[in-house]
Image (tube, rainbow, N blue to C red; front, top):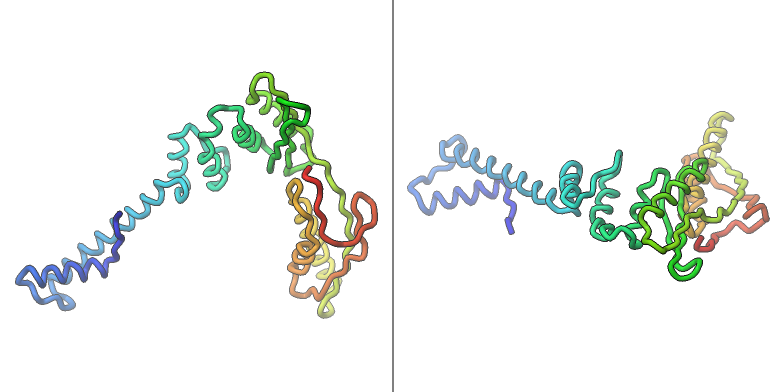
Length: 257
């Protein structure tokens, strides 16, 4: 293991060595010995920094950018267009499991690579032995049908012979909320309307980004709404419904699908 040293540490170490082993004993500011040692210690410190950087870029847990690309190429795993380092790193780490082509990890990773897919959930034996169902969580619900078909094509290519694999979407739960917000002080009508619109977007964004089977938290709704503006004093959910049926505004745990 190489211990990284700063230029000051190197300078002190080299100065001590020369004092103990040579006739050079003057190292004041402006001296030739001090100038030469400072130049050498700075250069070596730069090499230490380069060595430390290269060491970090050699490990998949810390590599990024083109260095991560190079590691992926070794495992025949190329980066997708506009793919983040974190997602690419996840695929590289699990590349060894995708080699067989039809195991659960391979199917999961290949399905997640389909455009518009946020996440997938596999359910085995839904239609007896040798069958499974994949529920997909999509980003844009307006492209639901084409995304289901694209994932189904991936499953058909990668599943083992004799195995039945079907792709479907989760059962969506419809939430309806009407929120009244109060302000700490009088504001222009236009500013109130702008804040109200942003509150609506924040609440909707939180709900739309819940993954399959994830709990709905009323506290999170409150947190997102109140965080929109410092002018908001409080909020009141005076109307709340689930699938068009009135309900109490509280946390909910949906079914797994």
